[in-house]
Length: 262
Ligand code: GLU
Image (cartoon, rainbow, N blue to C red):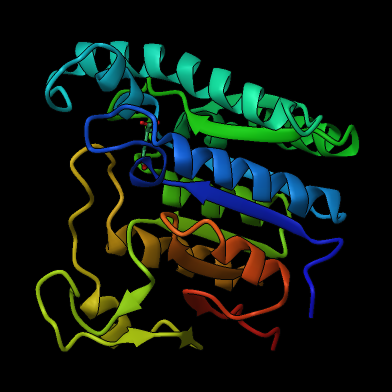
């Protein structure tokens, strides 16, 4: 079945957007924006959740690693977020699509009025045929108010906006029985019907050097999404053409199936 008239949330991780230097992965991002434009042209509504602000700030500032201190991290996010939106505006603009930036914190999600405003704005943007691009507002986040990672943010966005599908693009093909970077016998699990304690146990903890995610966060996101009736896919963001396979109705990466209503 082809993807048509669906509401899809696509989350891009830092490892998909940037090289390990923090500089933009031009080939990857160009390809992804082109295919997402096509998914939109085919009649789907697209909402993006994009990481990469801190990573790209690191690249722009020529720092040799992600900073440890909060002010420099937040400064890097402020710089990188501009770069990120500039790139999206430029690439989607080539296909006549308009983008919009939404930066939120955990505090906003806990506040009924602000959460309501967030949803209303995204829904209105979709009616206006715009691509909303969401990130955490890293420049003002502190421990008390952060959501913390964009896998969780993407799952919250997908469920609160009644998306049909959440696609998490990462630096891995999907969920494996063990860490494939360390264990060559690791096998990919293509369909996850239920998130059992065994599934949770095989998810490691570590994200990449510039991002914050990791498989554990993705499983947590899958729990939120599937409980609310939304399928979630983890796929390799370094292979953008997978999005075309998805559009053609093929199975890609690892899919966590939405819980059926009882
Ligand atoms: N909000 C962070 C950024 O844009 C990324 C968080 C994450 O990777 O989960 O750099």
